[in-house]
Length: 165
Image (tube, rainbow, N blue to C red; front, side, top):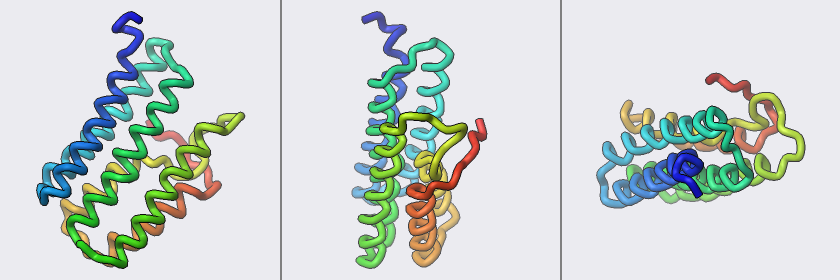
């Protein structure tokens, strides 16, 4: 395989690795770094799809790889970040449901026979923006819990979200 053909997958792997690094920094109480890294993962998630379309290298493999990376970066990593910040058992219960909703949202997207314009349910990548921003503005536990509930419900909903970019 030529390296040029793997550029979108390389960008997807960077997204995945950034999500993993965010988790590592979160469990080591380096929340600012973990949050910045999640924001950077959003950039790479945006780039992998754009580059794949631009180079006409979209593939089923790339789609599934992107979903796995997104589950780590925008499902698990924000949950670990916020749990590490607050260390609250009620939040932990919500996070288990949130990670399940994240996985469901991505699996549903991957098996949809007919793709819709935009997105069915809230795109998971939005969580890579919401939760680091909540950390930076020093949001309360109550606000974080409410937003995890809303995010989880919106991801599994059948509401249609338009593509912004």
